Length: 217
Image (cartoon, rainbow, N blue to C red; front, side, top):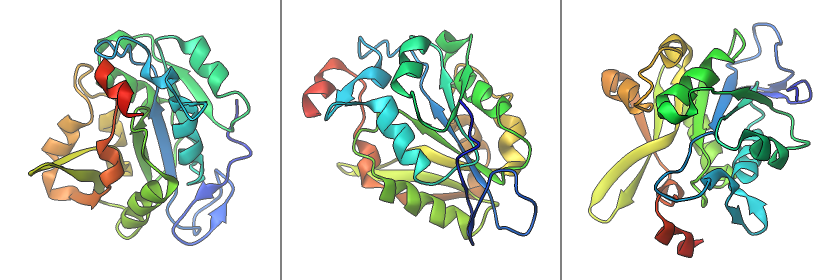
C-alpha cells in the first residue's frame, strides 16, 4: 500500500507528503507490529478490543496525525497483520530479524523512511488505551522544538515511568537505523538525556505483556 493519499502533518498546515520546504516540520511514524509476544503467548498485534485488532486500532490513531509516511514493521504472522490493515494508507516493511528484539524492528522501520521527515514517531501496538488526543499532545509538544526527543511518561503507583510512544528528531534517524537489535529505543533516550522532554500520557500505562493482562481489556 502507498501513503500517496495521506497528508503530512506539520506545525502550520496540512500538505501532501513530499511537499517542498516552507510548509513547517514533517513528522513520519513507525509502528512496530512484528514481535513474537513471547510472554503474552499470542501475537498482541492481533488481539481484538471492541471488535478491532490492536494493530489496526493503533494504525488508525497514528493516521489521525497524517504522518508522512506511516510505516508498519511486520515480522511474526506478517500476512495476518497485513490483512488486518487492508485499506489503510500506509506502507509495510518486513523485518526478517523480527525474533532478534525490538531494536531490529526499529532498524527496519527507520531504514524504510524516505528522505525528508523532520522527526519520526515510534509506536507499539499494545497500548490499548491510547487515544488520538494522546498522540496529538505528544506531536504538539514536539512541534514546539523539533530538535527534541519527546517521550511519553506516566505514573505507576509511586513511580514515574517512561516509554513509547516516542518522537525522535531527524538528526537521530541514522542512529535508529543502526541501533543494537536486542535493545529498544531506550538506548538512544539514555544516550541523549539532554535532549529529552517528557510528556505525560497516562493512557500509555496500559499495555499487554502477560496473559493476565488480557482480563483488563
